[in-house]
Length: 537
Image (cartoon, rainbow, N blue to C red):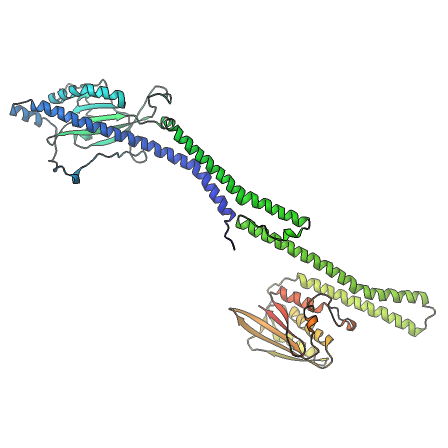
């Protein structure tokens, strides 16, 4: 059997695809915004590291011009933090500064505090080094759009890309950490009263600003800090800048929707249309509707198509059965009715001319045919009940029913012998049904065999494939059933004893009752007489 997806699987896949489109877009935008922050931090680290290196060179140049050892010592001792001696520089202990900010986990600090006016004098060497770097910082700002500040060991600004030269920034968190020799990065909120800039503008409308602070360490002492800051590119501008790539992504999503549509058509719409076509063929009486559709697509449609095809076959068989049954009933009723009508017409026309014996003859014909019709009607009612009978789980004792059967045929034309094993005490059917089945089989044997026929009823319990069943064998040593008639004995109205009152419904009723209990009946091959095997779960 071909493996087909189930309808719920198709719907689940389509739903997940639809769900991933907005969720994927949100996740991508969030990740993209986070990457913009990391990219900004990385650029600021590079700028700050370069400025630290250049500043240290300028600072040392100024320091080398001082020849007085006492003055040199006093300058170095003025630095606020003395760091431990660094290890020798090798490939194993290189410590590059890596981006560490993450919008999902990094705290967002308030906007930067304003610079404080101070009366403290800046470090002379730091001031001179800052003066030499100031033109470079201002010129670099035109390209990298970053805010750059260099402070001495007191936190006093000695070089800036802004207008806060000579002020103190020692109170700011990032600078305080860097003055202790700890490089750090942080995100601060940014407030702007200006309207959001156009997408094509170089201004950025993000409400966050990234700060990077790197300590300036000379001879194991923190002599200052370089602070770089910049607003990361906002998502709108980044999306505008990547509009062509986004167009490609949009086309990809459109392709995904088209694929979903094709899948829905292939696995749902087309099979459903084929199913409707199958139903239409059945309505028009076309036998093609009795065959399941070839490409059902999904398992549920395949099952439904198979069920519809089976239902169509069953309905046709049922209709044929009803048609045949009606014809047989009509035929069975026609003969006695014809006899009745003929006898009544003769009596009406010649009643006065007839003598008593002739009148009795025709009245006997009427009585016999009426009795025949009465038995036929009763048999038809028994067959109707048998065909709609539903087993209710009743269990009955076998031996009491067998005792009644033996008693009934004790002085009859049959000699009945019963054999039953000790393990078989009950059977899954009511006592009336059990008795009715055996009575019908025994009466059938009595009808078709001469007087004195021996009938043996054997009942035992058999275990097969871990399933137990009761087997009842009813065999006789009578005339038997010819090979030509063996295949027809369970058909309604088939009988070879119609002249002896046979209706041809007995075995049909038995078969229906047994099948209603989940069992079966079959004619066994026999050297002499007839033998029937009944199996009941």
